[in-house]
Amino acid sequence: MSPQGRPKLARRVAANVDALLDTYPAVALLGPRQVGKTTLALDLHERRPSIYLDLESDADLAKLSEPELYLGAHEGELVILDEVQRVPGLFQNLRGLIDRGRRRGRRTARFLLLGSASIELLRQSGESLAGRIAYVEMTPLGALEVDDLERLWVRGGFPESFTAPTDVVSHRWRQDFVRTYLERDIPTLGPRVPAETLRRFWTMLAHQQGGLLNAASIARGLAVDGKTVASYLDLLVDLLLVRRLPPWHANIGKRLVKSPKVYIRDSGIAHSLLGLRDLEDLLGHPGVGGSWECCVIESLIAAAPEGTQSHFYRTSGGAEIDLLLTLPGGALWAIEIKRSLTPKVDRGFHEACADLSPERRLVVFAGAGSHPLQSGIEAVGLRALCEQLAAFEPSRPRRPPRAR
Image (cartoon, rainbow, N blue to C red; front, side, top):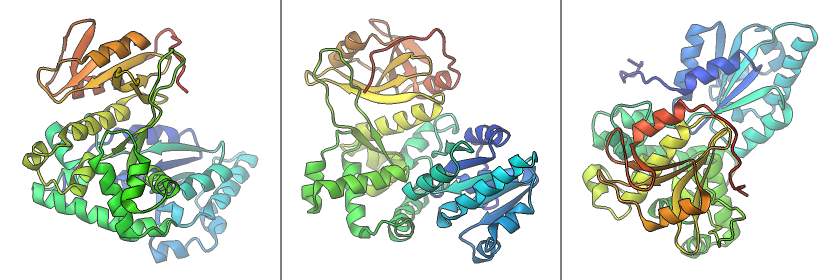
């Protein structure tokens, strides 16, 4: 059990972080607040010789008044710096410590940097620690990390929300999460956006879950210009709260849609923005299909091997694929998403597959296991497909149509 009495959830990303810390002098673990970064770091703190500093704590922050002096005394240890984006000037000091140890032929300290992903954090670390740092994204819980997929869909994957004793407590936690982000966290990261305006924008995106981005319509609704809408979207994407799924573009002689699709990355947060408290509320809402699509896409992308590229495909003529995954080695998987136990494939999916000739044609459905459908298409449950992606190993390279 966790210190708060919640079940301790095993996170798949933990093994990756462990391995990278044995290879790189610095590893940045990025993700939204409350996703589990600190819990993972404290578990490492118990298993490795290390120090842990929370840079939101005045006492810990005071220890870094002379960062090179303090951190230099911990050569050979793991140094965990939580909320590191609050001290952006620290990255230059870390580079000096890493390079000095290398010149002396010593094993330098290993730095694990935890941060709520932000433009500033990525820019500072990219400039100062290029070639010395590996990045790992920590997402909310996915289908391979939980037993109850329906609960994951309704409540989302933030651990506090998922493990709450009731749907009411879970919904309240997510409401507080949204409020805290809008009123405290986002302003501390730099952008000065009125909290109510950003809430309205975020809620508009939830209503359009899985739809093509219509920036002009949103701009009219908020009484702002298109550039402002773009800046709001960039902010939520950089904070790993919204996914901008790009369209597939290839020279195949078809007129292809150019606007991205937009998803609230955590389905539970989307439901909170829409005022949906439980499964009954969700099943009666017109956005139920887009919500399920979001939950599936996030779990599949999280399970896919590193280097996988994700797109959707749509032509002006109606050919469409919900999710295209280009896996390492070039294998192309076309994935349709249906919230049904007896999925039926639309003509648009057949036409899109004829355009692209994917290696696998898959339909994620609401059941478990897998079974064949017509025309070489396979119906696969969400967990089963996530397991296949996690176990994927590239075979002979294949050259799919190039995505631009």
